[in-house]
Image (cartoon, one colour):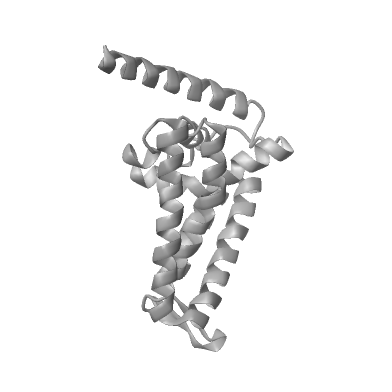
Length: 194
C-alpha cells in the first residue's frame, strides 16, 4: 500500500510532527508521557453523560468512548497494521479508564487526571525547551499535534525496535522532509537572531 493523500496522509502528518521531535531525549519523554495524557483525558471523559445507552450490555457510551473510537478509526485509516495496534491501545485505554473511573469516582478521579496531566505536560514542555530547543508542534497546529501524538510515538517505537515502515520508502521520505523542515526552521531562527 502506498502513500495516501489529504487527511489520511501519514507521511505528511509524521513529517510535521517529527520535525518538532528530533532530539532523542525529547522523543523518549514523549514516548513515556503521550499515552498517559491520552489515557487520563479518557479518564476525565468517563465522567461525562452518556451519548448512547446500551442497557442490554450494561454500557453507557460517552465522550471517552467517542474520542477513543475516533482516534482508533483515524489511525487504522492511515495505516492498517500499525493503526490496528494503535486502535487496540486506544481500546485498552478506554476500557482501563472506564474501570478506573468507576473505582475512583469523580471526586478523586479529576484530581488524579489533573496531577497526571500537569506532570506529563510539564515533562513534554521541558523536553522541548531543554532538549529540543524548539516550541512544541501543538503551537503551530494544535489539532494535528493532539491527534498525531499517540500514533507518532507508537510509530517511533515500532520503527526503532522493529524496523517497521508503513510502506517501502516511508522512512527515507519522512526523514528527508523532516531534515528540510528543520533546516528551514534553523535558517529562519538564525535570520531572527541577526
